[in-house]
Length: 429
Ligand code: UGA
Image (tube, rainbow, N blue to C red):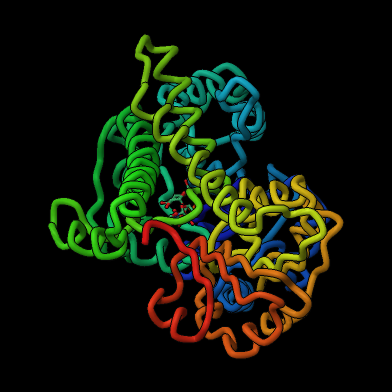
């Protein structure tokens, strides 16, 4: 199929590249000319494992190209995907002006029937608005079907999530769009759910909110574990073996962050309010999440007693492993909280240091993981990067003036850390 993707952020670039990989002819459009040039020259605007190789392969095969011109992408395409940002607004709702702008641009250059698919995460009823807008601004007398096809990609695992999804959700108003959507996803081995547009849009918000709820639930349980002497990992393992619950997204830590969960929860609460329902359950999920980081910061501060004039090493700045994304990162918030108490910080992240530099100032960025503890009074682990498990703990213990390690992601075994001579404090154990 001839596909156009508008927006080459995380979602658009992964989606376009993976569609090319499964055999479609894809043009990615972005109005950021510098980004288009970078991609045309073989550069990568984001860190996403496996993506550069796939881009290179599909560009070379002639199935994938980049342009800054919307008409060049839209005119020849049978199906146009919208994958532009929906940033949060101060009141919790999302700013849909990029979606609206793109809908108008598509309408302006539509000269034949198109299927316009929304991939961005949007509040329920956005599809209706997109359809209305295209109809209003389309000069040529051509028809168009709007489809909702929410993405379920996790940063850091996006290529795999795209090529091996649990399900594909297609929300349609007219059955006319269904065969083309089935054809696009035919090479992907996953159940394809066809539903109405509003339900498809809600599936995305409800799924993300439920995953965030699962994380807040286990974080709340971690508080009880600490107070009672239980171990949150044992509890999560035992709960997770119940197939109705499942073990995934039951890792207690510093709480969820990133560009999706915090924004999507606020948006879901807001749209629920607009529709007449006060979603208090999700407000509680948010409250537990922000308390979790604060509780960990207090644990550090109470142990150090006075943070001023102390130097702390911090491992991890990204909002989670496998990404360079620091948006809404609990690790960055923790660093800023510790700085506000007067602590001096040495920090390291395998991928996120460049992006962190823009938001986290007055810290020392160290070049390698194993030099993090040099001259420090304590070490903090803030992101669950797998390589942190291979930390040279003997060196860390020697480098620290006091062998104190705060583990916000439960990477190590408490008994083993004690045996190595550490004062080791983690979450829910
Ligand atoms: C999330 C969803 O998982 C995707 O399905 C969805 O497509 C995406 O949002 C989106 O809406 O675009 P993502 O934000 O990339 O993906 O990251 P996750 O892997 O879901 O992690 C989110 C946060 O939860 C991270 O801060 C992570 O550290 C935290 N987390 C996750 C926990 O604290 N505990 C867990 O057990 C799992």
